[in-house]
Image (cartoon, rainbow, N blue to C red; front, side, top):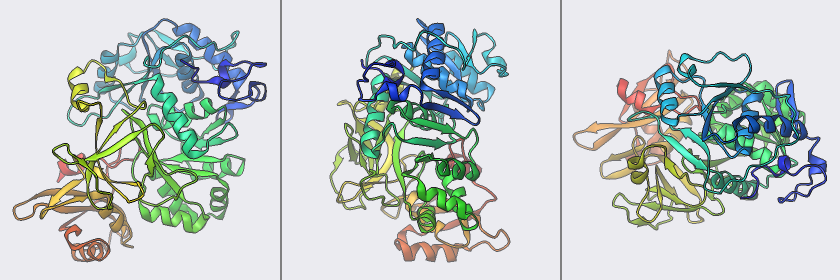
Length: 496
């Protein structure tokens, strides 16, 4: 297998297999977290020291705080040909104990001085020295299908499952995104995402390192940090909808932020759908469009709006190079219509897929069709030109009302266009006449004067269709969200 990080493993004087001239890269800043940074030469030493410590282990855990040491730990582990298990520092004790028991790591890597929870006390601890030096970050011999990461997915009906992501999936996804986004070693990425998730870790750290570029991690997201880094030469911004919503809210009173965003080459949103209203506000203030992409822990990235394509709000673009994508009916037959209305479940196939759920052959078998397509559980429509628009999750966002299959996402976008709505989520609930009725969960812009169900129903019916109007409106102070900003609809339904 070729190296995951040519800029690290091809030392000065050599020529990279990806065309990166290492003599030019070795002194370039690879990672910057706040005031702390490492050049590629320094990272090769620090990651090489980690690789030497973990060599021969099957798996190691990484206490994935948003610090320089986390990036060094994962990079070094991958250089050693060992699988990393990123741990969410906010995980509760029961969840953390399950992950550690299930993955059985040989050790836990962490920043020096970090206080680890008792669930990790039995593991040998390796403190990562970001200033360590070795003779170089030699790349261990590893095969394409060798595990690179074991990332635990959110448990909805049971404990989290460990998705085993092979090395080929990392390489295939990052190279496909380089094609779609025209991503090169000259790009400087700014982000403030968690590092226990594929968005922040794979795309946001390993992506720049594979290209020979730079990443500037904010530690904690802020609009001030985004403006500072984009003004100081960063070319790309990765974020989740919550972050872009905060940006959109701040733009009217912050011309410096608008000017900084206008300088960016690429603004990318992912992990959940970005409301069309926020797309439009950012475009109006900056002249720049946010592009969206679609992926999952098990598949890494499947589709994206291309840098040289149309950044169409509300869509996640077209399949990435090497990715096959189809929509299927409930009975598994392929849905061939490209009319922007016919809803089907997304299934994907390609080198970007995980290999298995660790220790769960039953769940692995259930996730794939007989001919190798992965059942994503996401519902979507396709436009005539192949653009994909996701309408929600099969389990929580597909509403069957009055004989229609309705995606919650388009109703949420319509609701957010109402001036009296700050946040919105849509679910279905049983109805004796319709089968399911549409329920809108609203955080009003003015809690003292929330919009009525009649007002919102008429608003939606005028924009979409009468059968897509909400029949019930429930007002909340805030919507429940996870660490990536996704609305936790199961929590809404459970509290109804």
